[in-house]
Amino acid sequence: MKTIHLSRIDSTNTYLKENYKSLENFTFVSADSQTCGKGRNQRTWISEDSKNLLFSLLILDEKLISEFKKLSIVTAYSIITVLKEYGINNLSIKWPNDIYYKDEKICGILLEAKTLDKIECLIVGVGINVNQETFIGEYNQTPTSLKNILHKDIDIKELKEKIYKRLIEDYNSDNDFYEEIKEYDYLKNKNAYAIINDTKALIKVIGIDEDYSLKINKDNKIINIDSGEISFHINKLNV
Ligand code: BTN
Image (tube, rainbow, N blue to C red):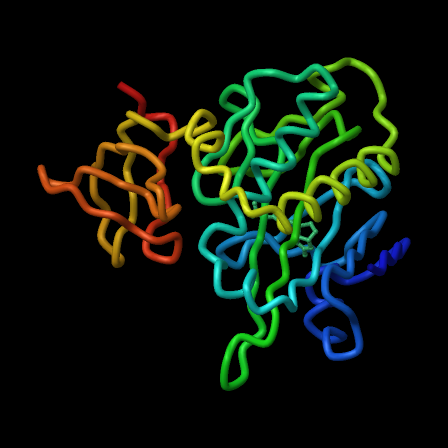
């Protein structure tokens, strides 16, 4: 398995998208800074130079590619288990791909696919706020960092190694982690405004379902949605 560290790159996801043909499964590329970091929904991912953990992992394995629906959530779960080793509790997964500390975002995950006739590879891009203390600009969700929680600097390289090891172990495991994952479901039982098929709707979340889709109640009908079909507009509308 190959690990690459770059001091500066446009985006670690883009790097893997452009180079996947010459790289092996589970190639891990991290960077101190990105000039064009990508977030979900065409947003940019801004990170202070050398303050955070920014990486992407290349998935060429056919079985994992076929299980792409669960990949973001298992990734979030694996990262939570490592963060808990640092003594951080109150962590949860905001379906489909954020990690929250209480009501603040500490990690974002961007899963991308390179598709020709079929899916050639998946790229799991992860940004974890580690030693950055202030976040300037507009954020949909209030950001926080490990340093803001623990009040001390964290060794980014050590954290990176722990997370890489855990991800590979969990990706290779036969366990699908559903029983564990459902205990970390941030949206469970919350009311939220969601954009579903371009229409804004008030929904009640039932929770992450066994197939990793989100079970919701919309207009008194129980439906399951996949990540592409929904984007939460307001996320703190809890009842
Ligand atoms: C989100 O919008 O929450 C997802 C953010 C993902 C950011 C990471 S940083 C490393 C990797 N490279 C990118 O360009 N994006 C991901």
